[in-house]
Length: 361
Image 1 (tube, rainbow, N blue to C red):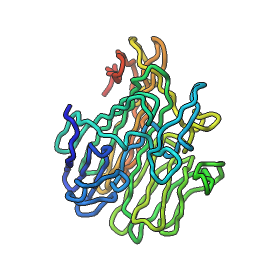
Image 2: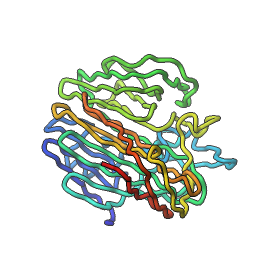
Image 3: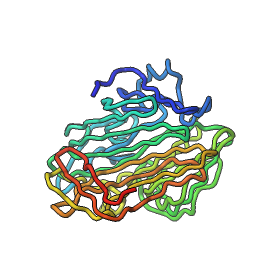
């Protein structure tokens, strides 16, 4: 691995171009299709001197998304307090991965893999490693995430992606949803869930900073220059549409805002990641998800995959991945393929499982 430095990484694939700052929370500084900005994007000179991910085009959120109310929570009988990481909020925001440097594990012309290492400290009381792989293609961008516990205690974990889409005069959203989490105007924390059939409106007419449930199908995004489709296997989506900003955010996340403080966090998407152990496991292939992608070349494709790798227990179990497919093009599909046979996995502390699939195509 190489140490991060204050310099841009550039990926290219035909008309697609991406710039990234590993030292700035692995923030995406720009994403373009030809000369059209997909996300809020800055030129190379400006990107090289950005001093906060909040001014970039997007970043990963882990080990939680959105807010941890008043920077405290109780987990498995123990109270925890975490330090402030958002100057204008009383809450902890968006996790820790967006505020630390990442190491570059590998790089090519159109792909890069980075690693973030969290130690137990004032920012987060549990240790973990987070890997992120960005792959650019002529159809768009794919991001894969995997979180691995390096702690000796079970820990709460969630993932998300915080893109800042470029707002244009005709920016419009069509999203199928079932519920909206209302929030307290003073604390900005969720209070109750109410029914909402969906969103179908121009961004200019929206005023949201809410988490939504029951997200199904795809979120269609279009304006006078681009047409995109945002899809995911998770049912949660944070929508942020500030009227006075030149951007809006559609954030695929694995849990409800502030889920760690709710009575039953697991019912609201938060996962428990257990310490790694040694064992050899045989897992029915029905427990492991493999994705095969199809796309229609006339559409732009953007995808985001996130996974919490979770220890399922003693021999006879294994490691399962929860993956989130997020940005995809209109009329393209991510197809889940299940193969027959068994997967054999050898697990070691701090490592993700390597698998060999019998009968895999």
